[in-house]
Length: 91
Image 1 (cartoon, rainbow, N blue to C red):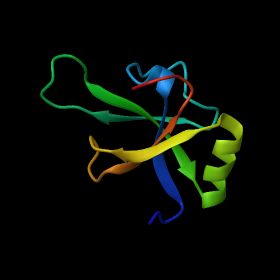
Image 2 (cartoon, rainbow, N blue to C red):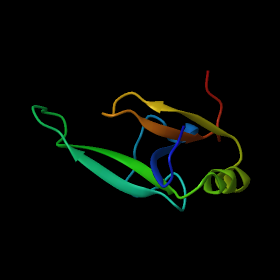
Image 3 (cartoon, rainbow, N blue to C red):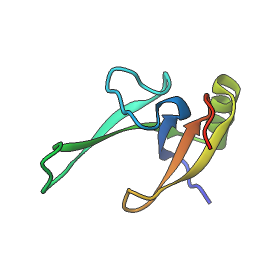
């Protein structure tokens, strides 16, 4: 059960493998960063989030962007809800 307000991770099927700081997945997206330790490739983990105030916000997202895939993001602690705007084919 989701307790609102809720912050969810938001992404697009067409951009699953690349997080662009210049191209948010939707107009409502907010960029967040988590500092990483003991890594030589990058110092932060960047991801886009969206603030949901109620289930109506989720319905408005579906009306505006079409099909959504709702799942949990395993890489976060605690696991966060992940919303994917399904705008491209994937297996």
